[in-house]
Image 1 (cartoon, one colour):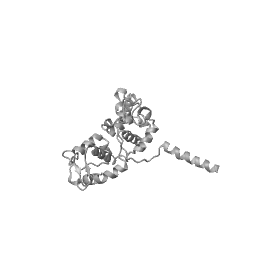
Image 2 (tube, helix red, strand yellow; image 1 turned 135 degrees about the vertical axis):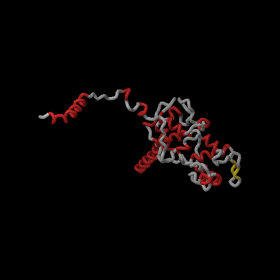
Image 3 (cartoon, rainbow, N blue to C red; image 1 turned 90 degrees about the vertical axis):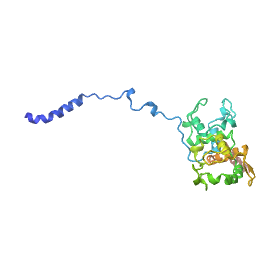
Image 4 (cartoon, helix red, strand yellow; image 1 turned 30 degrees about the vertical axis):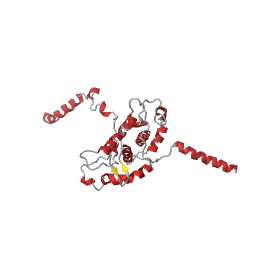
Length: 266
């Protein structure tokens, strides 16, 4: 073979030879592209519910997890140092912080419920726990306060609390939408009380403490504003059950068995 024919193949042969001799090195632990801390699961992520949590459903979860063993049936506490029925203490707690504590665990609480309960169940038990200290509005409360809300609040916040009242478009920022979970789960009851009682400067929210609605026969004193706080809470939490507690299904089953036995005797 002539040399002129070999010359074009020499660079290719050299290149292949160099590749064969090259040592491929994998990155060591200290050279990894992604740090371990970046792949750890978050411990403060909040997954908000797609519908209002249910306080009665939360009671079912409370019983399912046997929370009373430490916290007592009424939240007064047995082995737990925290009294969940303390109204002043609970009024300073944000629902979102309670969610994080129950989901990921924390000091004096060895359980992290994220692997034991669904997200919905955690939110339900958050609001049931709150109800041990702060009683939610009953249907009678809602029916009584609704006309007062309609006359004094709905003009800005809307009749359904959506922040779309007839005066809303004239305000900057727009009035609060009470059904915005992200916003209101980040508010304590004391914060809501302050906003209603003292108003919010530069946002068009007036102060109500000490005022009267003479047509409705209502004076906005401390006690009534606390009721209004729970009325507002009702837009983003429900006092209606969607599931039946196990304790409520035992009795009907026993009654049916008794009725069947009675018929056989007859």
